[in-house]
View 1 (tube, rainbow, N blue to C red):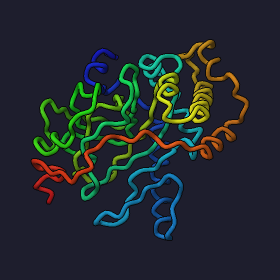
View 2: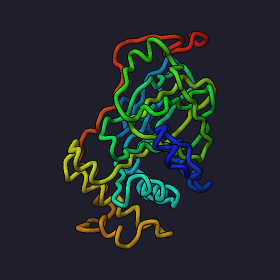
View 3: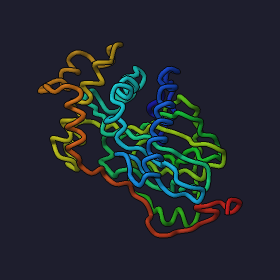
View 4: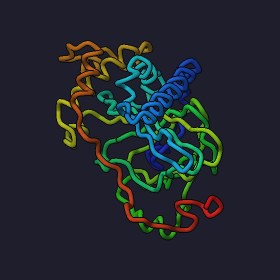
Length: 297
């Protein structure tokens, strides 16, 4: 991979491919979760992590958070893909930790668009990655991600971008992806996703990764929360059969870890710290064909 290009533009569609058995498995999981969430909603309840919204066409599942708590073994195997481990080690160093894993659903319009925003503000001297693992195709002009390259180094006047340019600020790039592909972005790169025009849902697993020391220095979550993520990485690296991380590097994650996998996930579930919020323009701003293109009104 050309990581220099990634560092310049703030995103890259990698050559990492999700193996077909795992891709099929997570498509099954996505269908299972959606069915459970909609059933619970119809009965006036909810399942942990599910966000069901009432679109004009009826209730739809928008996201399912904390995928790691419910599908631990499947997710750990996915995160232990050699190509993915090499990528996060290359970008974040040998003490990288996985912070979060969520499953997002993007449905055909009418459904909320993802307006221009920057992810969690952070010290740009170290990488803070948001990794998209695609279960379905994301095509050009069909709600695939839009980026403004090079905007990851500081906060952008998003209100100005929306009012003046709508979906098409100077330098904007659409980045389509195929099912099974992996896209890595810096948290702070300016990005968005316009309405999806085609039928069906697009499912994408989003995973956050960051150097351990950067999370510790930022102090947005407490040390116990971070230590639990270090131990989670120890579980993932038990599946590093190609030895991407050396024995000495794995020792960092294993130090002091004396829980079972089930006990660890239970502790992660019980010890919650809020994430660093993304930066949006929270005013009701409109621009050229934005946020809903005129032909869809």
